[in-house]
Image 1: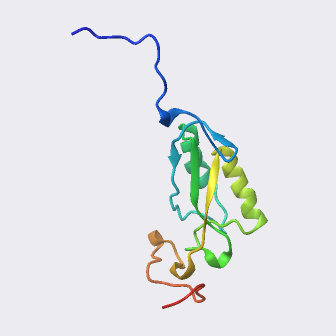
Image 2: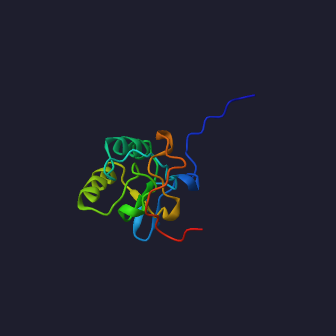
Image 3: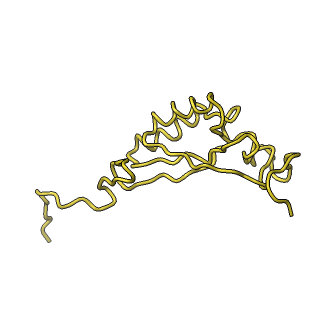
Length: 136
């Protein structure tokens, strides 16, 4: 059996072709979905987020979604979750999103499912005093 060497590349698979969504053109159709990191300090992303999300962008992902980002202090799942409700947090996210461009946020609100601490810090079962949302 003879090995055949292709000298002319064929068309790229659709996965690796650029795509435009509402005016934003991404280099391919590979998306990194949000992953909770529980690594924010005062609800602001840290160097951990910069490196964690930036590596996916550097690795070639077309778009990177950061973890659920709370819209108010009371809506966070844990004290270790990030938010975007202060100028300091917005500034920290700007730094991260520039490194992992295009990085998009997943807005979130924990409602009655919020915890005081992240699961890896023993947060299961301990609820904040003031729940937001309907309680059963």
